[in-house]
Amino acid sequence: MKSFIIDRFEGRWAVIEYGDDVFNLPKEVLPEGSKEGDVLDIDIKVDEEATRARKQRIQRMADQLFEEG
Image (cartoon, rainbow, N blue to C red; front, side, top):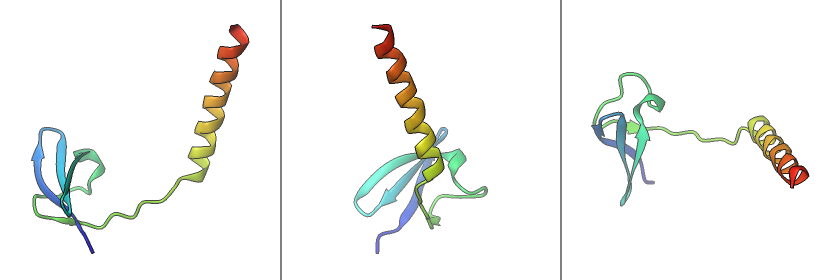
């Protein structure tokens, strides 16, 4: 299984290795005290309530846009 590993920090970014892939994450999303070489346990889940609210907000903006035209 591939792991998320903190390779280094560059300014406000953490450079993360995931297998052969490398990407940046804002340092503020990492646990306090994270350091280079740490292996991250990332549990990602969908926030269904926030997703629903975002879709509703976008739909309202689209409705307003087309009502004005």
